[in-house]
Image (cartoon, rainbow, N blue to C red; front, side, top):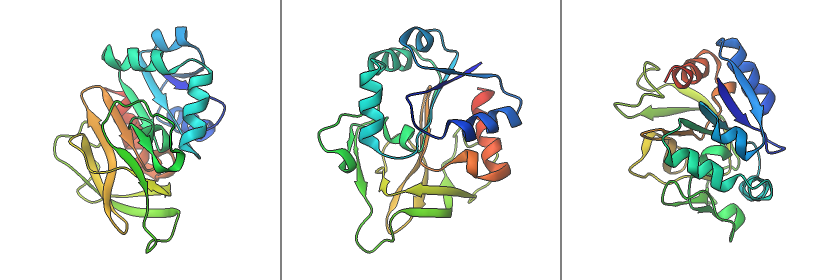
Length: 197
């Protein structure tokens, strides 16, 4: 059973549809008790880093999420949900991320068209369980104005005016900047990889 955190925003319906398509069981959750009992946890996201983190704090879900992650529970952040794993973002100065991964999100430079919207190539790194068997340079769908730095947890990179982390992975923590639920059969494979961990 995959638990999807419902904090009042995000791309819940498209994530639900994707999980249904791969035959995965799921539920929407919005409480600390439900996070504590989760088998697998997904934090979807569309929109603003600050709004997401403020909603999580208002619902008192920050510490339950961190306890879940520290306890080894499989966690998958999608788009802004991945960004939330970092310490913070230029999009919302003064708003703390979960801090599971060191580093801050930065806005793409003036030379780039923002948002970064559409299909782009990623380069998965060897050994990723989340990105297993998706090919050496697959194309996936992005919609982001801010990007994560390359870090030790980087599982795939993408180049759009600069090279950035398209995916992160460390032990039980996984995240993608792109939208697997909008990335066709390849996105289904990625979601299935997480579901079968």
